[in-house]
Image (cartoon, rainbow, N blue to C red):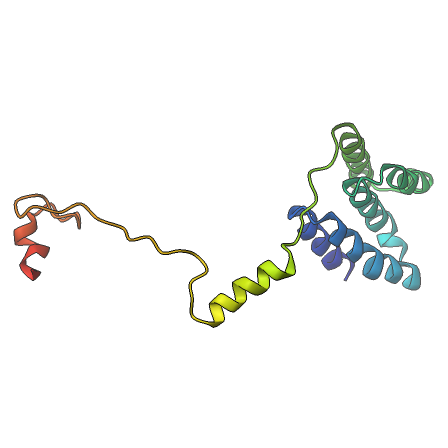
Length: 157
């Protein structure tokens, strides 16, 4: 469950919806982690949460989360230590350069107007007529057959 929840949070981060990722962490993963007291996931989930806080621009909170995890670092496997170090570096870089812009949902009225047009059968996007160049009878057929048009698709005219 924790890995799936972290993947979901990563999906939100991948779409620049950092607030959505933070909500997943705060409403689903962290309460479950606290309730079940699963030490195996403590470092992974909380350090992941710290990175998401940094993406939200909450750098001080992110660094406090990482400081609280520091006492556990000595007992971690090398791969877990690297993960922790990588996440600390991400937080430093986000503080230094700033996070990407937060995704903003389109206003509800824009979405509603778009849906209304679809329901009425109107196209929400204007149609443009595409004019193809006229093919001469003795030109090569545009289908790629290398035959003259008159011997290929020109017979249909």
